[in-house]
Structure formats: C-alpha cells, structure tokens
Image 1: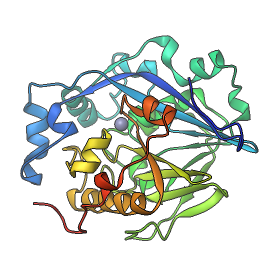
Image 2: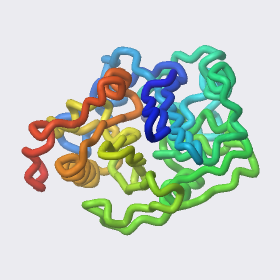
Image 3: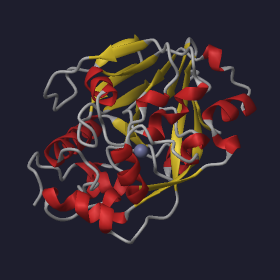
Length: 296
Ligand SMILES: [Zn+2]
C-alpha cells in the first residue's frame, strides 16, 4: 500500500503488513523489576490485540530499499523453530502469528507490481523472525544490518531463526560506536538521504533508519517501542534485551525529534498509515520532557 508520496522529491513509501502478530501484554509494556520480566512474560495469560508486521519499501528516484522483510507465512509450519528448541518453547509462550500465504512480502511486492530485482538493499532493523522471516522471498538482494546483530543471530539470539535464511546472501554489515547517544556514529553510506543509526535495547544490535525528505525525517524505528505513546510516555517494552540501553535509545530519539520534524514509524504500530498520510510529526510536548535521566 502506497502510504507516502512526495511528487516533488520523488520519495515514496509503501507499507506492507506481512500478516499479524500478538504478544503477551507485558512483552509490549512492562513495569517492574527487569530481572523478572522473562518469567512474567512466559506465565502471563494475557495477549495483546492482533498487530501489524510492517515491511516498508522506500523509493528514492535513484534507489529502492526495503526496511525489514516481515514474517513468512511458513512460520506456522510444524517444527519451523525446531533447530532451536529453546526458541520454540519460549516463542510459543511469547508470540503468536496469523499469516495468510498471500501476505508474504514476495506475494505482496508482486501484487503491487514491484519486481524484487529492482530493490537495491533489504535493511534489517534486527534479526527477529518477524523482521527477517521474509528474506526467503528476497534471495539475491543484499542485506544490510549491524555487525553486532548479525553476529548474535548466527550464534544464538532468542527469536532469530537465521538457519532459515536463504543461502548465499551478500551481507553489508555496519559497525556502530559502543555508545552513540545522539546518533553521531550514523552510517550514511547507502544514500545521501538515508542514515542508519544504532538504537540498542530491544536487541543489542538493533538499528533504525532515518529517511530525510526535505524538512521531514521519517524515522523507521523497528521495535524500539510498539507505538508512539510508549515513546512519549517513556514506557518500556518487557522484551527489551537491556532496559538501560532501551531507555537511552528512547532518549536519543526524543532528542533527535526535538530538533527535526520527525514522523515516528515503529514496526507494529497500526497508526503509521494515518501518521504518514497526515504528515503527523512528534510534537514538542511529546519529546521535550525528556531529561536525559532514566525515569523511575
Ligand atoms: Zn517485531
């Protein structure tokens, strides 16, 4: 679905929801002691409503990039996670998918008349299955991700199923500085209007993508938060690998949005269509209260 079309600059964004996901409610938002979050997530009986799994295609006049590949319909096949039994046991208790065969990214690109061979890069915000599962439809397109995320996905990272990725992928791995509070170590090498920034928290190697279109910054935030109010209210997702990094990342985005007109676009937020359509940027009120301190 074409959700952003600037005829003057030629920047266009298509959003494809590759099915739906539900997670345990404390997975989306957690208030409590960090160390208790995983047992709480596993045992919680309450699930969120069904949420989208966005894969974004960004078109510049001279380049096309896909931001996240979404989930593959094959995720519900019996034994899909079986090579990683710990993954299978945990994932079934944390996350559910509802995906039709027609909702895989390959099928959706085809219906939209977009030849995958014209896509220059697939950028992964992180390697979790609901962001990387669709790689199986995108063989031949170079994959961009952070080196830290790649390394963890090849060893063990809860939620990543890298053994199902197609063989022969050409990876372009980005190294970020260890701490990068104001995105000073951004990688601008793919396109002059596109920056990769380090946004750890959900996973250690998580990145976000900033696309600049004139005065506007489209901030593709992956799973930094599930929605915009979480960013504005400093509410942390329970699934974060590190609460400290997650808070620092939210602070960095809020600081960025204080100085740039920023449309915030996480991967599981149903409101991104309205936000892009109406060019709704983060307001000063939503970001100015951040003090740089971890909230209590
Ligand atoms: Zn996700």
